[in-house]
Image (cartoon, rainbow, N blue to C red; front, side, top):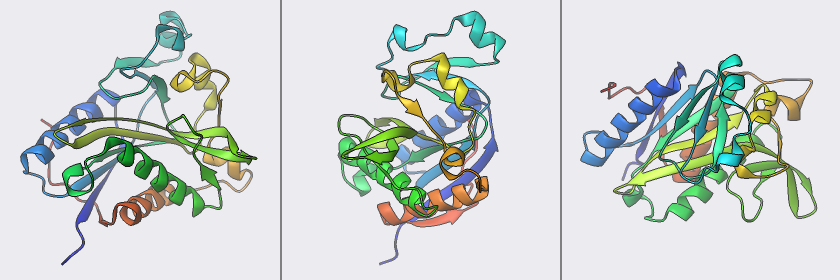
Length: 233
């Protein structure tokens, strides 16, 4: 029996509003069966702050005036989690998966997304892991704790089809995280692949390839790059 496919689409740079409309449309088509394979959208956004369902007012410390001055849009969305930042130099992934074909368990799914990112980071020689009680991926092991957060995760699901996803800092300007309490975690230290690998650096295309391959391995899917079987609503 052939291994199911993972349709991988690199959207390049796209506004958050356009990508949100697109992923909701793809999710609707995945729910209806019009798209019959799981999908992974990869994208980079202009500066934006998103507020999940668990967002607290105190987590966004910047004033509206400061956000406008720095060119940062703000969106309230249906994903889980608190506040986070997306921007240039960050790889955002939207896995639109039908969990009825995997396991109908959102906690399992979150751990699988984390594992995919951990596997991808490992291909660049960056040890990564989880911190108990927190969703996301961390680096900088110190005993049984990890010190720096490199990727954030927040998802939503309907009819066991997921959307929203992860944000992996590649060569992100980390100063934008000073506008908030990232993910509502006080005193969290954010990092990036570039910071962890300095001075050798990394090519963004290599990160995209590693992510697609890792999701394929972890979810037992065959990545198919360049697939485009949908269009924005």
